[in-house]
Structures are given as C-alpha cells and as structure tokens.
Length: 227
Image 1 (tube, helix red, strand yellow):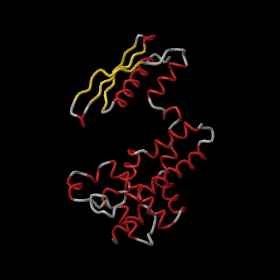
Image 2 (tube, one colour):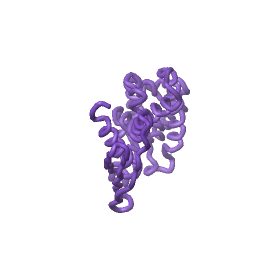
Image 3 (cartoon, one colour):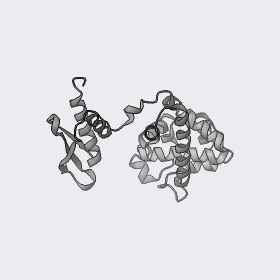
Image 4 (cartoon, helix red, strand yellow):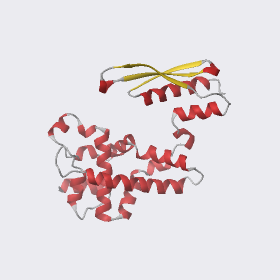
C-alpha cells in the first residue's frame, strides 16, 4: 500500500486521505468483486465534463461538432491507454491470475478503465479541484498540440464533404467479402465514385473500419494532383 501511495504522489500528484480509494481504482474486476468499475463510471463522466470545458475555452471558434470530435479524440480508449502507460498504471494494476497470464495489464481497455477510475478516486478523495488539476497535468501536452478541426473528421466525412463541395454524387460502399471466424472476421469493402470513375478497397475488422479505410484511399486518389 505504501509503495502504491508513493506512486500516486509521484505520478498523480495527489496524496490520498483514503488510500483504499487508490487501491480500489487499481483493482480489476478479475481480482475482486470490489473493483474499479464504479469509480471508472464516475471518472469517465468527470473527465468528459472537464475536457469539454477546456476545449470550450481553447477553441472559441469551433462549432459543436468540431468540439465533439476534439473531445472524442482525447477521451477515446487508445488515448487513455497511452496516458496510463506513460505514468506506469500497468505496473500498479491488481489483476486476477487469468487476466495477468493473458497480458491484461497491457490491454488498452483495462488501462483506460483504470485511468478513469483513478480520476474518480481523486475526485472522491479530494474534490473537484484536485481532479481537474490531475486531468490538466495528464493532458497538458495534448492540449498544447490539438489537431486542426478538419483533421479530426473521419475519412468518410471528409470524402463526402470533398465530393459535395464539387457538386459530385456521394460514394457507394459495397461489401466485397467477409472472411475469418466470427470473432476474427476481416471485411473487404469497395468504395466507388462513379462520376470520377474511381474505385478503392479497404479492409478492417468491422464493416465501418473497412469503409473508413476505403474512403481514406479514395480521398487520397482524388486529391493526388492537389485538386
């Protein structure tokens, strides 16, 4: 417990009045019925609120859709997992034997949930100010280097806007094949823009991901000459 408390002071910059909250935040459901799921629920809500408030101030010209996309890029599982790894959450997790053997400490979902639970724990232990301070510290670099709003749009949206801006019809997406077992399927999708006589292919673990890849390839094809 003392080692974990020192870790929290170093990486979360918070000294817990109630160390049991820290322990709970780092306990995966595979290890105990008393686990971090409720704290994760709380931390997720507070994180979304805080990030939204920061973006509202940092991006005064952005429309609601732009702000939503920016927030999504900051609170998605991959981003949360990256932050969790950077501060060593993977080394502090309490996991059940099976989860530990299967490499659960490195799974993005486990790390993301734990980080949100830690935010929830700091919120309960210290209140709003320490929890907001923690989020500001964890996201400082990302706040300084926020992508442009247009870059946050997914490829299908960017392709649609590019075509509409030139009075062209929307692309057609067709599933060409689905291969693999039920939980390991790979979708192949064809994207076609008839008026440009253009056809691209995308592959992914879901139809949506395959469509996004095909759209990105189509956009690259259509803008190759700087049009």
